[in-house]
Amino acid sequence: MERHFDEELKSLKQKLLQMADLTQEMIGFSVQSLVKRDETLAHKTLEIEKKVNHMEIEIEEEVLRLLALRQPAAKDLRLLTAILKINSDLERVADQACNISETAVYLLKEPPLKPLIDIPNMANLAQRMIKNSLDAFVNHDPALAKQVCEDDDEVDRINEQIFRELLTFMMENPKNITRAVDLILISRNLERVADHATNIGEEVIFIEEGKNIKHHFND
Image (cartoon, rainbow, N blue to C red; front, side, top):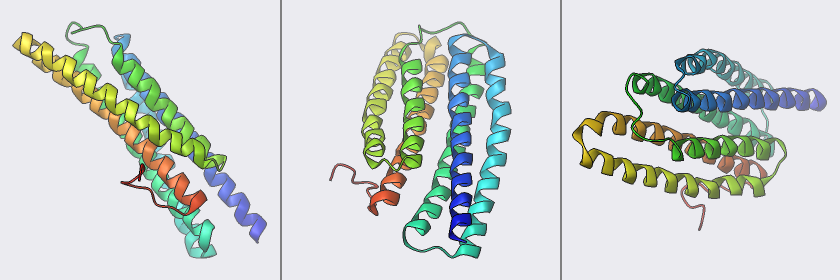
């Protein structure tokens, strides 16, 4: 019975990894659609979301089934409840990627406002945070999870830098306002992706150490 339960947990972890891979791909496509000015990449993002939504439902139903049938305690209970939260965070990452793609489609109808450097860098960091948070989860690595939480500060810094720069564009010329606001929204979406990665990192620490560090990581 215990061995079968371990296999079921392993299968759940694999599904989460597959879901995380898809969300990382979505982030990449959504930002590259803007950088390369290629609307087809934005539409790819929206197509992948259908798979992510399907996986989210599958994972949630499997966790609820295991909770009802196995009635786990202690660390196994923490693991299953954390999987539910991670599943939700990954689905929201997919939503953020779709928001970016939809905004990119509007931006592609206008000439570029400025060369895009910070937003792709921010996207790369957010993707890395998602990968590292899931690696920490699978490998029982709270140290890597804590690194993900620390990386969130760099994403916040870039987000603030982007906002300040685009604010100057809006002040210089009112015609820049719409495009600048759209770029700010994309930056905010990437900042939210990093927040979801941080949430996952916090869940890993909760699973491995039994500590809830939300809202007081540096305490």
